[in-house]
Image (cartoon, rainbow, N blue to C red; front, side, top):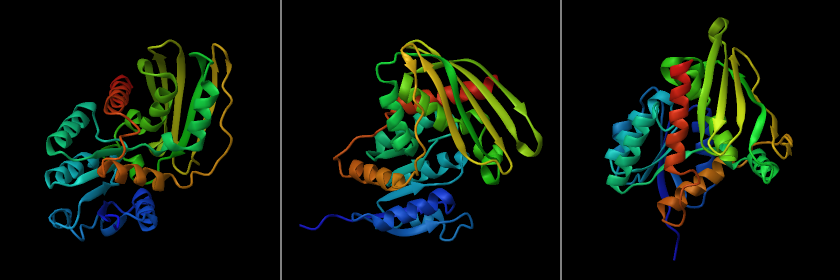
Amino acid sequence: MAERVHELVVVGAGRAGTARVRAIGTHARARLVAVVRRSGSPPLDEVLGDPRVDAVIVCTPNLLHEAAVAAALDAGKHVAVEFPLAGTARAARSLLDRARRAGRVLHVEHIELLSASQQHLREAVRGLGPPVGGLLGFRGGSDGWIGEPRLAGGPGLRAVARLHRAVDLFGPARLREARVEPGQGGAYRLQVELAFERGGELTLVEERGPGLGRGTHWDVVCEGGVVEPPPPSKPSGLFERDLEHFISRIEGSAGPYVGDERILHVLELAGAIDAAA
């Protein structure tokens, strides 16, 4: 018996949307029907009305996720969306409830948690106990929509990937302090002090500015020793792995690799950071 092929639409044609199109092209149980671009051709409502389409992948800027996800769910489609699910935890909870009522999969991508570097860190912190200090640092560009608060949200929302990585390693956290030092041309430096419910603390520093190269730095000490930082690795195959999770969830053979409560907790942290900073 032939496997079912799922007909998908990608909303957004930037870097993530392009990666999604490539991943669909290599997946045996997925086929690309259309890419909805910012120019609106084809328009989103037109492709959502296509009965062949059973799933939508949303790859728009952060603060445009909510409207596209809601429209797709209301049209009866399964949805995958790049992180963050929405601009606030309240909006995200509403979308998750909407998906449950509709009986549709709402899959939130967190490919950083599928990476070889995160797998290395999970092994490195095992048995070391809570962090007693240290730094999780990130540098990245502010070029394009990520540098526009009306599209990307505040510094806390833009730090969601690093917040997820820290919570994945050390458990739920609360905000102790957050501050932002603005620079020129949309540059800024965000410093966040996190305390973990299971004990321990960690400093997150994010720097963004025009033309800054992207990189993540780990310098963490736990009660039982120093965390060995992950070796450099190419993030290859992550969108393909995430797509397989999404397709498997549609088919009922897999669950999420990030639970709803974790998604909401990290968005609450991001909101608290932006309110404090």
